[in-house]
Length: 228
Image (cartoon, rainbow, N blue to C red; front, side, top):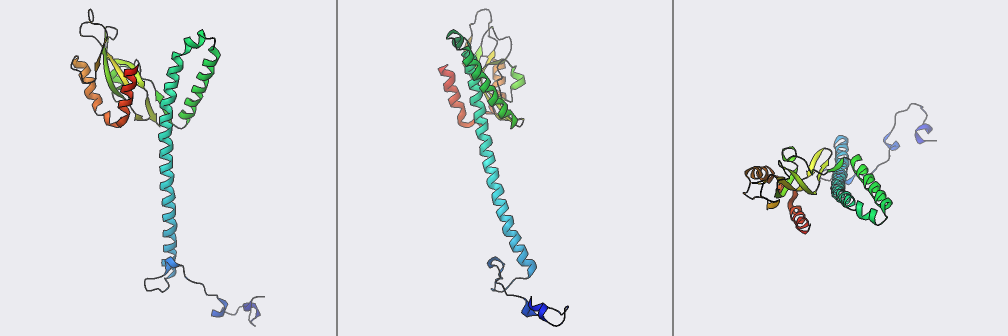
């Protein structure tokens, strides 16, 4: 039985002897080494917990950003795999491996579905009019020829990638445009910035503001385009 119950009165007021001393938290000590009032002691404890929560939140945000960046890169690789599988259809059929190609295509679609579930999608703009994708592409070269009645995306070296509906990677493309003399000029490629066609220049000016969005990714795309 407690010491308070041993006293004669059941409702006898508590005495200081009924309380045990405890050391004050180090962070709650005043500047002069004395104890803080209870409200300031509680505020100090809450501030410490708030700092811990903020640190964990910042760490989680950084990890999430890294994960989404990895998902964007994966979306680009999956799009390239899909393109390669499309090119390999006839060789695989000739080698009697049609089912292998179909299974690989299924796996590719499954990866695209998983990425779409977290909001990351890659789109091939090939064949799209320039005006429809001007803000989503980075033009590497212009290809002039009679087969292009208007400015369209002739070839996409990399897709445009959206994260939750927002463009986070510009497509790396070769644009097609009409030849200066469709009756005589064969299809020719002109570097971005060529003065051969004034309409092409208009397209280049519209895309110049996006070149910085890709940074160092433009040069690898140029190298792949030259190799192809």
